[in-house]
Each structure stands twice: as C-alpha cells, then as structure tokens.
Length: 228
Image (tube, rainbow, N blue to C red):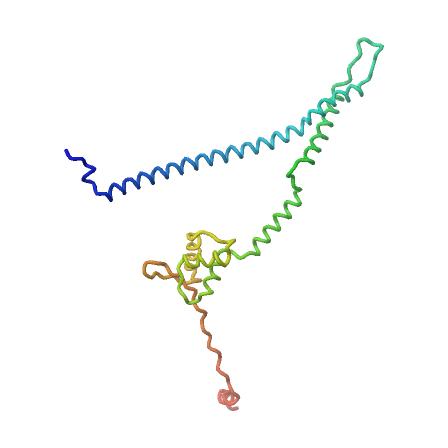
C-alpha cells in the first residue's frame, strides 16, 4: 500500500501544520491567562491580609509596648508588705488601663502608617481628576474633528487612525475602536458612509450653502404696499 502522505498535496500538509501550531499557540495563551488570573487573585488576597494584619498589630501594640505595660500596672498597684495575703488590684481597673494603652497604640499606628491619605484630600484629588477629564474632548469629538479637516473627502478607517496617532499621540487607540466610532457617527447621521472597492469610506459632508437674501429697494416696497 502506498504511503498516504505522498499523495497529499504540499499545500494541505502546510495547512495542517499551521493549524496545529495555531491551536498550540491558543492553548498556551489560555494557560498563561489562567496563571495571570490566579496570580492577580493571590496578590489581591495578600493585600487584604496585609491590611488586616496592620489593623490587628495596631490593636495589640508593638512588642516594646507589651513589655512595658505590666511594669506600669505593677507600679500603680497598691503595695501591702505587712499582709502575706495581699488582695490584688481589681481586674476591671487593669483591663481599663490595658484598653487605654491599646487605643493609644492604635491611634499612633494609624497616624504613622505610610500611604494613608486624608479623606478630604482624596476627594479633592478625585474632583480635580474628574474636572480634568471633563475638560478633555472625547475620542468621538477628536475623530470627528480629524474627519472635518478633510470635509467632503472620503477617508478610510486606517487613514483616520493614522491622523489620530499623529495629532493626539496620548489619546491613540486601536483601529477597531476608531472604526466603531466612525460607524456610530454614521448611524446617527453626523457623517456619511459608503463602500468603494470593498472598503468602507467615511465622509464629513460639506455645510449647506445658504443663499443670502436679495436686497430690497424702497421702490420694491412701494410696489408691494397697496395704495390707500
């Protein structure tokens, strides 16, 4: 029996090899994406644990404060050397002092914690960022402005995308995003869309020409006004 591979055209063998390589590439992408998602979830959990541990550390205080607290309590406790069965200080008083020390330690830890931004400052920064964003034109406005530069001239998506990258490099985006914006403007009737040689062409229409009103002379007014 003849080998079937010899009867297979070389194009089919290349196509099969390319398909197998593409499938392996897609599987590797899925594996990498899964690893990234797992690492992001682990990082998020570690950050949450860090915040919880920081709060717990603030509640119990530092090791030096824990060692110094009993000494203070013993100094404040009443001394009764003459009585072999001295009564210890009430537990409520000891617990109150320990709670006060923990509260002071917590306030100190929160005040010295790095990266803590006052709520009022955070609100001001957020408001300033929102105001800056609202002052900037949207991508739709930028794309329409670039198209109006070539009013009446059909433009393809790639040309508009190149103009956007050249005029606004910080606002550059993908060709697909530019195509979506152009289609949205065409659907609302702001611009015109047509297909030429299999390519979508977008055109900013020329403004309608307004014919100025003709001058009216006094004689014309006298002719229009009927005699009394």
